[in-house]
Length: 324
Image (cartoon, rainbow, N blue to C red; front, side):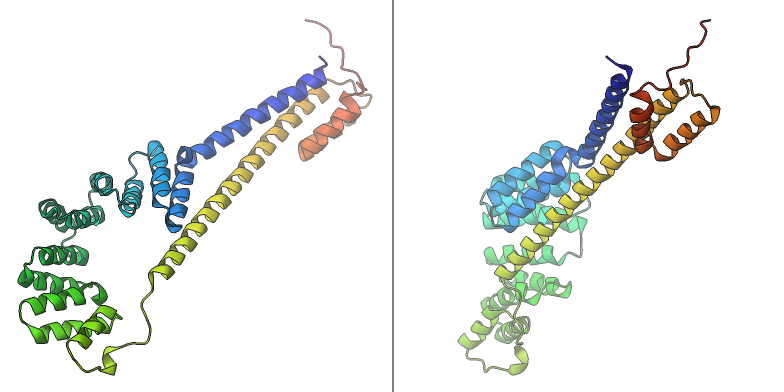
């Protein structure tokens, strides 16, 4: 094999090795595919296919088993798919991995309440309130659990505490009004229903009509709360945006890796060409200097021109140096 081909194959081999190294680095940055599977799971959730989303999150967790966010997302997907026991296990793992947050414990407690496992719900809520004592969601969930157990007086206190801590009236006022009705406090119930109508709670509006209360314009607003469909559309847009950003980042990092590879390979080719140039028997000493400067300044282009003009034609030939 001619020396020129050997040099070309050597440059190609080094370039390929650098490119594979760049790809390995990109794969490592993406968590061995975990980022990709997470984005696909988010997209499936926005499309309403929670089972496939849970499968994608499971693949991501195989690559990042200690990612609390991934466990929480898989728990949400499993809960929506009706697999409550598996969802609770994911929430418990999330709570273990993220000891500062109470969200996973609240989600698990919510599933326990739906399953009427009040003892397990109570334990989860106690731990959640230890982590976040001023959590409006925790007080709201406690109140809903007390209503389910027909402890209405205690429930009203928890509902009021949740509202004071910032819970949205449309999430609490209707149930608070019903709890007040169960304890015989009609005026307090009407006050709660009117507060709910100001936050666009249709249930409160209907209950006021059932109780024969006159409509007060100040209790109503024209702007409706966001519907479930619009929230789904927003989630779909966010997931699509996340996938676009992911694809853009992968393409951008691939471009950077290619540029690094190209630069490295150009320096290798230039170095080989300058080394060969230094061994040629040029008739004028300045010719060698000109070739070296040209190759150094232009790298790939200079090396290619040198290969065609000098190396391939072997003109001038390699300088014969005395042995020893």
